[in-house]
Image (cartoon, rainbow, N blue to C red; front, top):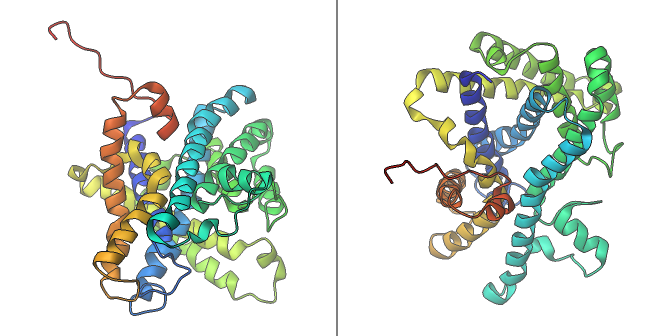
Length: 358
């Protein structure tokens, strides 16, 4: 992979994971706060409900793009085992950590964690809370990984069709992955769609560096966003809404705008070096919900609640703090045993060989 594209992908990972955290900053965008229903509603709408939610689609697109480049020829069993170790194992570990912390919340603080209020001891309920087999995980942010794993396997099985008739595959995915038609195989259809769109882009010869060039990305971003809002107004065209085209177009449009932003950032501010933190992005994603919960508990007891104007600072800064902590933890894990590294972040960094003079 060209170094320019590698730096772009790592920069996008840092930006997208940080943006995804804004969706989950306590008490969350579904609860009243100054960024949800107060003076700073626009901040919540832009950082959380737009950049944060679109980042899921862009990361899915990148995953499909990379899968096509690196793993399209792998036997399905080998791919499944690799993805299980790198994606699902750390997901299950951090899901267990989250549930443990949630269970400990009541005896420590006297407050029941609302994410486990409905949890019972039935096998299916526990399995879903932990692994998301037939329903959402207790830590809902990790549910993305479960769908990403399934979408990756579906993509690998579809390689022969993508090689021969990519437009047909695009049409089938667009129509088949609508609403809840694929549940419980896939719960968030847009993840499957954007994984396939990323692979289709690679199959047709497009590169992320080419797509992110400002003239291309800004033009497509603007046109697709406008088309999405225009389609939303076409209430007399039910097919548009059945296929969720307004939402897909807007997600694609904002994704192109993010691509343009990342490319400009790399070109204009190279010393910022965000791409160097990209290898810690997955760890930041895995740990962000429990860490955000701890930070929020401290903030609320020392500073104020979600209706205080100071909450704006917490909302904006908390994801950056979590990512900084992930970088420190990641550097520490570099020296940890291989099994610990795989369990906590799904990848192994080998220690640098010592020179003969050491």
